[in-house]
Amino acid sequence: MIQPSGKTVDHPKIREEVGKLCTRFPGEHWNKLDTERAYPTEFVRALTDAGYLLVLIPEEYGGSGLNILAAAAILEAVQAKGRNRAACHAQIHTMGSILRYGSPERKERDMPEIASGMLRLQASEVMEPTSGTDTSSLHTTARRDNDGCVVNGQKIWTSRAEHSDLMLLLARTTPRDQVVRKTDALSTFIVSMKTVQGLTVQPIRTMMNQNSCEVFSGEMHIPADALLGEEGRSFRYILYGMTAEWLLIATECIGDANWFTA
Ligand SMILES: Cc1cc2nc3c(=O)[nH]c(=O)nc-3n(C[C@H](O)[C@H](O)[C@H](O)COP(=O)(O)OP(=O)(O)OC[C@H]3O[C@@H](n4cnc5c(N)ncnc54)[C@H](O)[C@@H]3O)c2cc1C
Picture 1 (tube, rainbow, N blue to C red):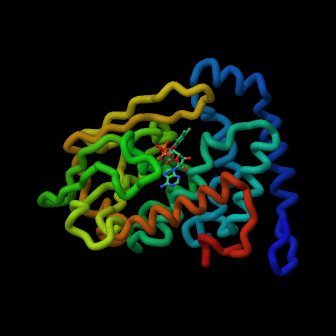
Picture 2: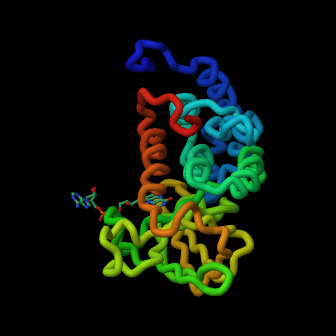
Picture 3: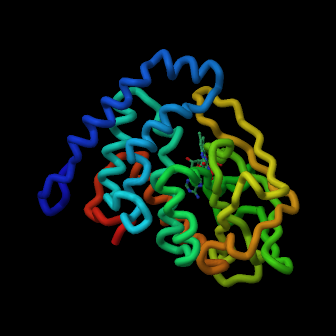
């Protein structure tokens, strides 16, 4: 990979080491998982222990503070070996929204545990059965109550929902007809999936072992500090995170080598 400056920013050592790690999990291992519709827990644990899933987290939170090109090298190396990065690629980048828009308290609380792999933040709920690409027409609502919000709605294709502790949820906090720009009505919440009441996760059977789910929120109460950043400003937060995801999925090279750490 070459930056516009001409500086080589490929990561041959990372690619080589990731490749070696992948060989510990041969094709038969993946075929068995696929047959059993099982999650590649051991593979994800090995990537975590080797420090590959924390590369975009700044060093002050226990990450390695590398840039998105290093993350792209890791994920591309996984795919080049025929392994499935979709099992955990979101653990690398989803926390970018928290790093950029989260409160200092939230970052202090969650980031070290996300970096260590103790907390999995690898699910994000944007897509709904009736909104698809047209995100601003989503129907899930979050209404204020005394000490937080109550969420109602349905999401679909929420990948890794069964294997995540935290989830980013995009919901409507103001009716669409009460805002000037329709994107102003959306807010993002950080949901503690293992403890919240009113959340139902239902796996979707797919041709490939994608671990995607339908997720239903029925009068789901979340605390006030679950709100990420400012209320009604989340369209940009989600786009920020998605841009990183798209870049990593495409393993394309961008000039801004400090995507999450600038
Ligand atoms: C395996 C898998 C995993 C996924 N994981 C997640 C996840 O973890 N979290 C999550 O939130 N979502 C996830 N998704 C959802 C994914 O982001 C959506 O599939 C995507 O947003 C497209 O929505 P849709 O299928 O309704 O397509 P539609 O919105 O119906 O679009 C269909 C086609 O029309 C095009 N199109 C739509 N609107 C326009 C327009 N105005 N002008 C021109 N072209 C247009 C689109 O580009 C697309 O090609 C996942 C999907 C899959 C299949």
